[in-house]
Length: 226
Picture 1 (spheres, rainbow, N blue to C red):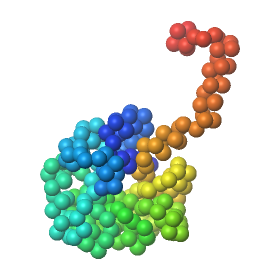
Picture 2 (spheres, helix red, strand yellow):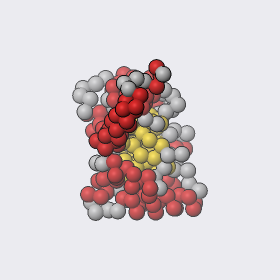
Picture 3 (cartoon, rainbow, N blue to C red):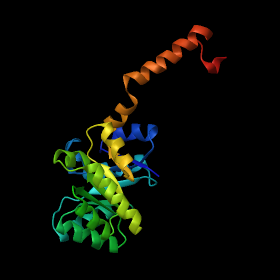
Picture 4 (cartoon, rainbow, N blue to C red):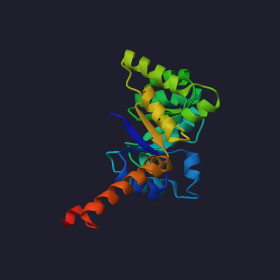
């Protein structure tokens, strides 16, 4: 099933979106958290968990770049939030080592900062649950993100690998649709892109036309009042 996740740490935005869209998780990183200003890190993330519930996934990124630091931060995140959190780890050499170690301990892992198929394949082989491909950034580097998604999906399906491709880093809803069409298992997007997808002027124009045609015949009355 296609998975839609929110790429934000804004509590109001998350609260609004989970009531509207088919959201199955929330992802974040230090850059996204920066937009919220100086916050109490764990208190804020606990509030996010309260909003989305335990049935949706919460992906929290580490800051440390070395193996021991990543492991220590992951353990702290799991202890201070809950043991269902997906630990987001950039796919570097140290990150790959930590991802494999955490996976072997039963920890949920989201491999992130992925630009190449090699990164994704190695993270998948190390047991990462999700692979966050930075689609727009890949395109900006003249890397065919959609072809990468398509190729990776074909390999995973052929090999029966459990890792899911989580396309990320979008600048427009067209990129989101392209990633899904290419075979991404899920996408993580900013709330603004989701609102834009349903906020096209032509959509509202169609709604206005329907209402005008209704009132032309029935008058200004609701169906519920008939």
